[in-house]
Length: 104
Image 1 (cartoon, helix red, strand yellow):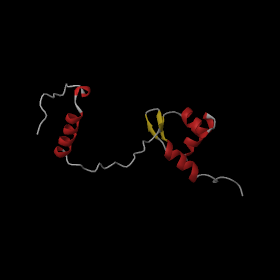
Image 2 (tube, one colour):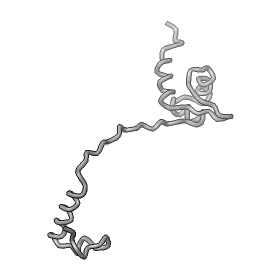
Image 3 (cartoon, helix red, strand yellow):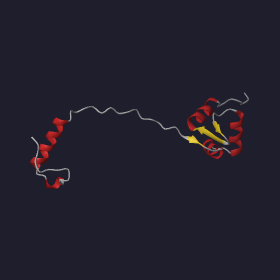
Image 4 (tube, rainbow, N blue to C red):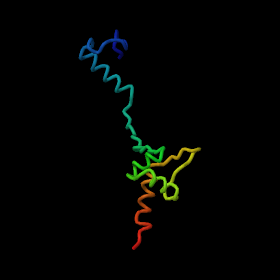
């Protein structure tokens, strides 16, 4: 049973309690309740686009950051003159290289 004289432009404040209840009950019968599946949280990859940004991440000088890049210890992509570093990959490489090169 549809409520008459109600249009999408009718303000909610003008509805009576009975009309509002009837609208809600009609909505429940029209749309079956479904479970909403949530997507797993996606983590966005963060990138660094310069040696200066890399040095800030590693808390070192730009010269040291450049040496690390040139030594091959850090993964990066190079497009033309631009170097792109993925933050997680850089931190992972620093973690795996930790302790290497130290004299025992």
